Length: 176
Image (cartoon, rainbow, N blue to C red; front, side, top):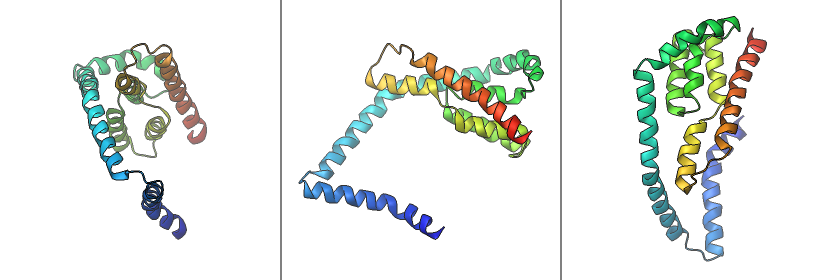
């Protein structure tokens, strides 16, 4: 165990050292390239800002309007037939949109119901097994200027749906 701890402490500094040594051997201006990459990173961050603000506003409107709670109340009888706790539905709906909002919901569910509860376990597995599909498409496709997303949205949301359903089934099987 001490070996793994030592490796994890030294792996990044050694990686950086190897890069600097290789740059020196090949006579590549590593610092200049680093600064140039930083400039490009700042430009990319500023170009992504409108997309991020739009997503944050949309999520805030969805949560504060009460639309999410109304939808959960509407669909909870159907969920109870399948043994799915309605408390995890908001997490399942927000997770493809925003990782930060989903993490907040997961934290709230775990603090309310406990990490070893059925709801806490579903929330934890769902947080780890799904992705922020809409965020990825918005930010990354927007950053490179792709306007037609073709099948990426459909496939991404289908993968999220399969991960959510698999989460519920596997947590039921493994933890009863």
